[in-house]
Length: 396
Image (cartoon, rainbow, N blue to C red; front, side, top):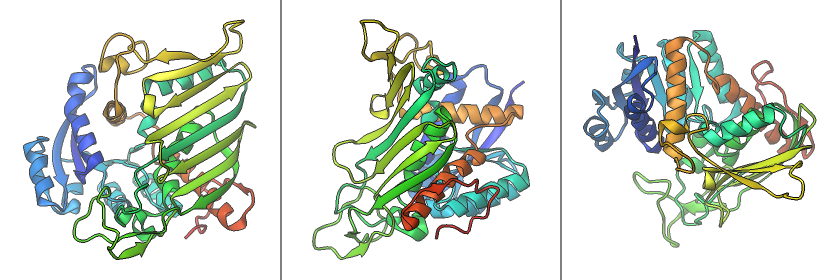
């Protein structure tokens, strides 16, 4: 017998819509599931989105007050997909109501806020999940298996990067994403978190780091009224100051002795969504890039004269891929990764198993972020301390 799980989605923006579509798709994609998802209530401040939630997504109802959605008795699991500054109060309220909580990253825009959310969930004893959705790409899961099986030998070096153009337009509006009190930190919270979570997933814990930051576009046009992150101002518009970083990089040493390099930017021109990694070992290497999500590059040292990277195409021989399309080299896309992570989270909720990545893994990520932030000030190497166990006074 399958368990009914009533779902509340807080915010029907891009990711709120993606998770809502996942709930609609899961029954047809995963017939052997242990649960039946039901879109119960969507909370959004915009009337047009509330109307869409019921009309187009099939929610039973939509409300303007997110607290009403969180406390509803017919809700079992809450998806937090609102702007960053609302994540912690929403998470705390959902935990207090005894709901399972899935939050888009960052679950807190600053490291101490992530720890605050984690502690609320731990105190309430509720299941948690966090949206590091790229970990669920079938070829990323295959890469992890190859590394764990020893096919690459001893891992010696990792290169992670997330280079994006979403903030490259100097006339892009000064929305909340660029404000420290609303978004938290910039690319270290927004997209470096994806790179760090990927590295920890594939290689393991990070021991020490040294980092660098830069704000490439220091001022942006002020928005008027409701403004999209992709809205554009005019050269003559009044401007305000960008308060968080556009670029960040770091060197690191993993707990297993491997070295690592990371770079992330929202203002580069060229890479449009280059979330990528390269893993180097004593017997081989792997490389993956979101822009080519269905391809994994594999180098084997024992290939004799036939050296060079081999392209492994995605297909139904890899985890989850066959739920979407059969055969080999038939592509899947971004929202399929969201459906995989939502299915996996709901399956864990239904069966009582622990889900990963949850808020504990989010703390692992921000523990690295805090060490990077500390190194900006000290201009030297900083050890990574577990913020779940240590104090979180660092940062501002």
